[in-house]
Length: 553
Image (cartoon, rainbow, N blue to C red; front, top):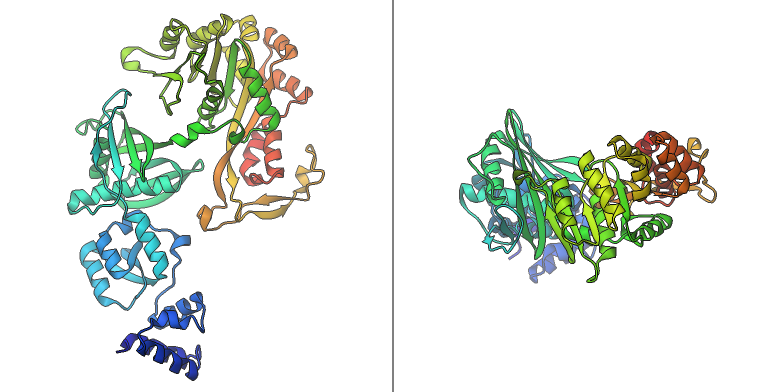
């Protein structure tokens, strides 16, 4: 027997002249034969046409979940079984109402069950059955289970597996909420999750491509339970809420191992937690995959051929210095070499590298670790960062006594790195003799290749840069693949300072960063600004993304 709702919808289509009487007769016959109305309608109308007519018929808005996205907290207010049973999924909370995407917005029983379980009044929206099924697969695939670990890092460690399983009760709701946010963060390639308590709300933000994005606003009542959940996962002291703590979580997500660094900090509204997500694939990047120009890549490889010396990688916090160091070490890996590192913390594990971590509790800082490494008969040494005169003194001494030392310094340009070494009271002749090259870098967002838009080259840029043969540049567009931002991923901007005799002479004379930079430009060494404009000209990034770099360097 034909469904009354199907016949009513057909009557609506005829009255509004979306189908003819003859088409209506054909469709009714198809329904009598047991065919689904939606499939039969495809003979006369397209998918979006059918959805728009259904939207008018039901009096609800059409949503495209692939473009709009799904709020994890909203989705996990109901169990997976309920979502599958009724072909629906909550996708956001708006003005105290739970917005639910449905294949059948007229299903009152479904709405009543959702309201009963979630505790929210509902507002139905229309979505395709396929969109809903995809969203259900994405957002109901979480569970935690504690596993054994053979990890050799300091401190307690749990391995948490995230996969498909229903969890019930209040505790289960918090588990689902936390796990779902980790799930979403990994899928969106976030580098950090910020869990920020406030006076009346609890905000969850993702750092994606270097930018913080607000993802979810929870009630402030969730602060203590969510924080406790994170601290349990990280092996922290749940009862200690005044002192900052550090911990670590290892996630097994869809068979992929994800390392998460956890840091807590007490505020007036409760403990703020930052979880840094470390994807092991990042440590596998080669020099070419970092976005280096050919001359920078070749220069870096020449540095690695040096029998001894100090290689400096410089840039501000979050500029990818550690990733570059790992890429350099991967070039050096060999059974014939003893490669030892001291890091704070060890972010990624590298096969063939003996890695150690700074531990201030036992007095093991960079300086002490470096002294210990020198007693280990090393060939190559990696020091996570030169922070003080003592570490700089030991690193330069190691470089002068037959070791290749790779390290980072927090400065803005390659020239400033040399000046920084002099400011640490390292003798000019030692800096001149030990340093063999400097790589400065930044990270900028990469344009989404699917939606980037052509733009004319601004007249103001045509002076001071060779734009010959370049008629246009690219800017951000916005599509579902890049979440509407116009950017997807990041790419490096680099400067390679070839440390020749002329620069050495200037260092010996205690030249300033400005003097060293002027000399580098006179030697036609491309600056960070030059590389940024090259990346713009080649379509890798936008002018908007590098404008601060251009103006500030």
